[in-house]
Length: 362
Image 1 (tube, rainbow, N blue to C red):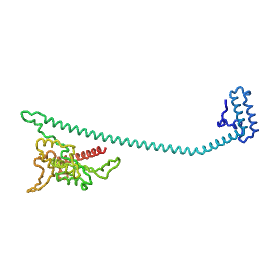
Image 2: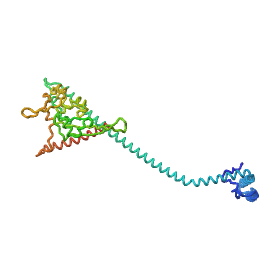
Image 3: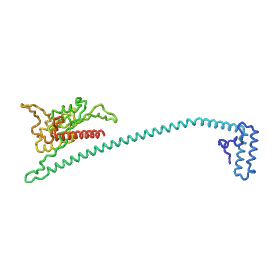
């Protein structure tokens, strides 16, 4: 069995012989003779490792008595000592660097987790808004389908004794948004229409408007690039007219108003059912829809104001009665109730326009 190489720190020849690196050849021989007698196999028959120890001493003595091999061994031992001393001086610096790296790694993990949580919360909110918009759209579509089905059923009812049943002649019930229109325009095109009163004054040529129930919202236009916002401000407003004819006149003028930078449509998303009922009865003349002119309020000889809206269009004062003024002295119980209903309707319209804008942004 070949002896272990001197590179093994446990087999340092100087340590095996118990001498220093400055020992002379005579000291090496004396140390070998003294130690070899102690570990000789003939004197240590009960020690199974005695032969191995004796062989290691013989190998160490032979190595140290060779001047060239001893020179190489001394150089190797000096390098090992210098390396050990250098690593000892680096130990504290290495510990500090490891500690700093661990702290940075912890901070990075925390920042990444916070960013992931923020992204998850944002995606959850976007999903909720999209789901709410989808639910509102489906609900509206179902309502429109139901109304269309009811109209078809009313048309398909058979005549009895040459007369139409009385239910088919009944007008549809008035809706909350029958006289309300949705207006959308860029503030750069209409810089003066920044308040509800200014917008009401601009549209009053079509008919009377209750300024207290006008709902406006201003929002910066989003850029096509993700994360950018254009400087243009878009104004969206819900404008309730006192009469259905005035609202119909504005919507009929949608094309001409659009050419001037203002989009106009029914607030409910579609034409009120009562207009379809009037059209079926021939009360809503075709020329009234094509004419699409604003109401011209003139003074009659007797001082009474009249409207130039087509006379074939009936007045629907019973459908959308003018709301009572909150400043009129002596408000009775009925007027107070109507005032509260108007405030509740205003709050509902504001909520609807905010939800619609959130759905468009999502």
